[in-house]
Length: 399
Image (cartoon, rainbow, N blue to C red; front, side, top):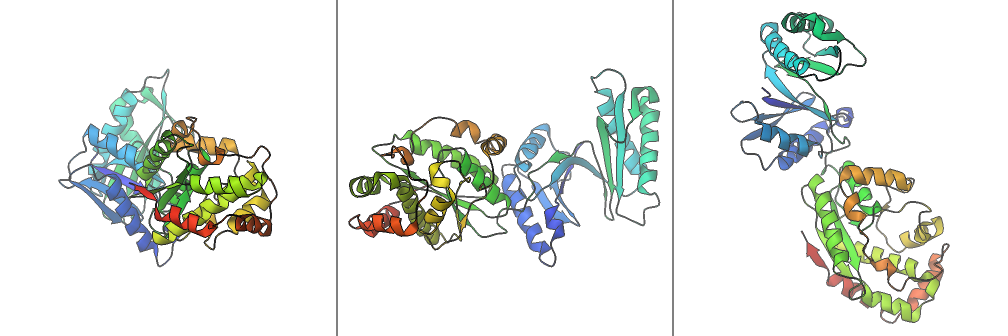
């Protein structure tokens, strides 16, 4: 029966004169997510976004499965509902409501009576019935169809809820409200460059930045021949999963081994990891400016490893002039794991593959560095900047 998807947003509704820009961006993202479906129309209606077939017909089961899967990935949406759209007239609303509710009540497999309720919302103040009147009317009609012995009214803990919205232009009826990730639509904020490793944290950091409206490009580092091809292949799978949440993001791939050998041969062992990180940030900055990204994103979480202490994060951040965003700085590992599982990157990240930071890793890494001391270490490396520029100019791109 469902011939419409009603999409609700929350944070966008708080915007002022530029709200239209956010709504247009949201519509563009929905169209992208549903691009595999032919004959689909996405349009704005006051306070909502509506998805319909061009012919106004009912969605097939296969179409609904795709829509439900894809809209769960749509930043900017708070929730959405497969719905039946009808005229603003109780004589048309009532039989559809009865059909939907009676079907759900009849399919209930639990013991005893099912807890049922109607939730109505009337934004059309010219409609003759109030929201409460609509609820009473529809409950009575459902009871007449199914019999009062089939359900009990429970306004707080209902197992089945029939939703009804009466708007100026149309009314909609629905049986479920499916949560979406919320936030802001991707593309309403500038593009950023995420330093993406094969670990759990950096994909979560990228996802959280997308949720704030910034599309992501990615950069990852390997150390061939000291790391296997699987190091890059793993990150490619992670980037592919993250790209399901945005229109497009390019993965830049850099080989850091030449720089790491120079650090090994010329610098104090305890500073190796922090020096690697500073070089990664500088190479990422070059790539970011080339791709017109406005900030760098890392998966740093304060105190999690030796390179993520306050002094070391300061030293690493001082290596670049670009804004560095650290959305996970106050998160613990369990929070990151929970989000990674939700996003779909956890199983990929959990595969154990060597990464660049393990190459020539110090036996006792420094936990408190100073930028000035690290700069002196970097001066010990012949052709330091030429090495970094060579790496940055030889990036591979994967899309």
